[in-house]
Length: 81
Image 1 (cartoon, one colour):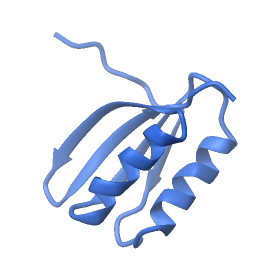
Image 2 (image 1 turned 90 degrees about the vertical axis):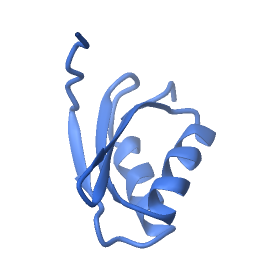
Image 3 (image 1 turned 45 degrees about the vertical axis):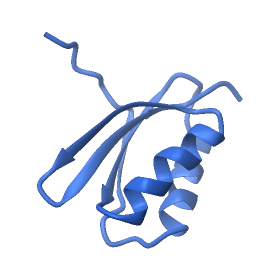
Image 4 (image 1 turned 180 degrees about the vertical axis):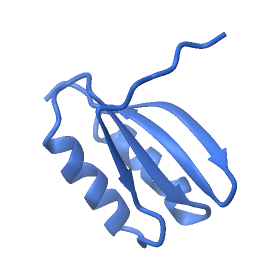
């Protein structure tokens, strides 16, 4: 039984192409506090392959990645500034 993780913000990026989905995710994280959680909804294909890896490269943590119907819901915890 896993504890439900509460996101402080959610970003629906379905239909947004690379690299704009990463840029929008990064800009949203920039407005948040260290340790806050952002839920990002991404399309299959390049977005789900590229955005989580790019976010990790920026020092943030991908907590979960769930496939739901035709999209993915990714929970990202903001790293230290």
